[in-house]
Length: 136
Image (cartoon, rainbow, N blue to C red):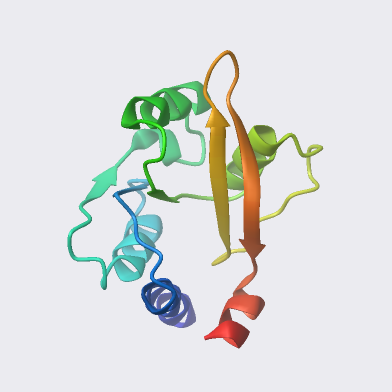
């Protein structure tokens, strides 16, 4: 119950801050999918896609390939699992393994600077559920 409320609150905060997505993708596992749907409730034009690449054992190379095909500047919401997402974000941003941790219900915003010859991104912000509750 608390997880659902947190996801809905994240969606409300995104709406309040006018943070919009062009696309959204979720792991096919039920909790991730439900979380994504709750976050997207106020963004009616965004269709949720289900990507196996966001499963806990997902293929990072395939995930990067999908993202690269979406085009530079596309704003994409990704909802998946830990520790997969933390390590994925860490790799993209060049963080040392284990130093970047997304808490359950946390949010990271990245700006991808390149996909080739290697994927790189800038970490714009990382918000824990505690911080998200305080700024609502």
